[in-house]
Figure (cartoon, rainbow, N blue to C red):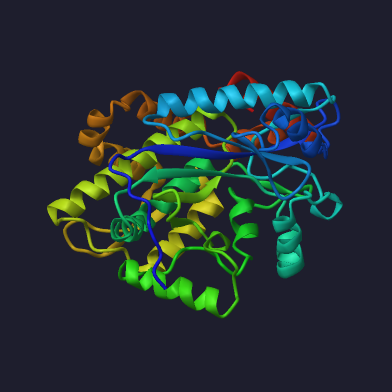
Length: 384
């Protein structure tokens, strides 16, 4: 089965950010997404609002950007939609937080959104889908064709754990400290087509993989393959899906800037014929576990530059080296200020570290929700 890939001649960028709706006083989840989206969508009827969408549960909502040329446009686009959603939420006595999980909400108590595809997901996947009280950050970067997308994805797998560590914001799940930096990552991996992508040899290999799943009726659409990083043929992008929902828009934008630079770097190396050989699958898998367990405090497996022997290196060092490697592309894209924002995450700690600091200082989980409200409103890490 041939799958058409929409061509992108520029590394355009887009972001989808999933949010929790909460009561500002109690911190409880608020199942009012349909009411909010109905109000916001009224001017666009019979179509829906273009940049605010349903998610799986009525207590979650997704904001998305248009196709953007740079991270500045991403931040402006997200901010505008967030402000619109927040105003509609406040008219219903609630507000928003951004984090990979709600600290104490119970998945079994949530109302499923009315969209038929979510009802079908629950029916098909059962318990794994019913547990998906999680929110992520998805980043799209344009590439020129499907063959390029597969080659880029094979290289991105090496750096995937860094994005997970930087975005980690889900230490608590259903009222318990998971002991992980990203409980969301483990919850989402329970779906049969989620997690790390397989090593693919090229676009034809991807087409064969998808044909097998579609023709055997294991999936009804390519959209039902939820790898941590995947090609999106309709958009003509490589889609990063490994990140937790970051606690601020600036953090989401910084990761989008890093993703855009990395994809552009990969494309240039591919043209020059010096894109590195893909990383070993077992190393990436172990590194994803380490990043999900320890976040920005993790030490990941890398090969020694001279001997090729495996060694452990701190995430902070690896992120700094990645930014240094990408410097020429960052200069081309003029996104150096956003690389400083990535470094700020390392300095302040990821969302997970900030949430835990609050609890270690005596805060309760409702206090964590109120803290998350303040961070998203301030669009800045304010401690914990």
